[in-house]
Amino acid sequence: MTHISRRNFLRTSLYTSAAAGAVSPAFTFANDGLAANERIECAVLGLRSRGKAHINGFLNDPRSVITWLVDPDGSFGQACCDLVEKKQGFRPKFVKDMRDAFADKNLDAVSSATPNFWHGLSAIWAMQAGKDVYVEKPASQNLFEGKAMVAAAKKYGRMCQVGTQSRSLRAISEAMKFIHAGGVGKVDLARGLCYKRRKSIGALGDC
Image 1: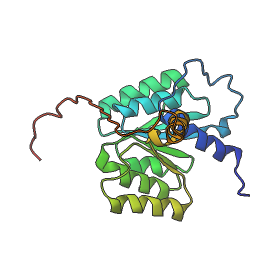
Image 2: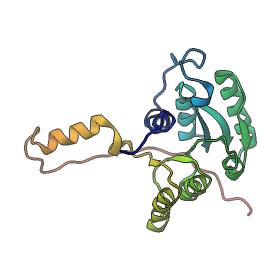
Image 3: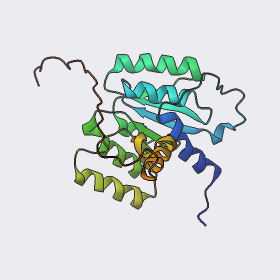
């Protein structure tokens, strides 16, 4: 049987709850029963939209602390650092280049909420640096990137989870088993729609 340390177990379960945005303001870092060196040191890449959910998830999970924030927008990044400092009691480091965070030997895990075209490379770089990774969907821009991510996880012995909760949530898994077992009778047609209006990114500026 493969030995799973308490710390590795915490890493695995942490992604399922925190990175998926499961938050609970009842959690506090002062009385969680975990030693400081048992908490998972996390970096969040990309601080808007889904990145905010990652930050809130980690802040409200007593198993984690945020030690790095990464974003190209310096002013917004510092504002996020203010928020993190207020909630967890110390300020994370802020950088614009994710590789600066990956160089930290104490960093355990990386969650990537970057624009889609950064998902694959950010995950690969993080795993090369010895970090476990949670990356938002889509995992990659193409099959080549996706295969490279799988290869990196195997080569460096790291965990890499993609945020496709429709494939990992227990409730959905149980619902699918119910349907496949004939719970709703014969299914001839199913339709789904997800419409999310997005604001314009603005006019193209000078390069």
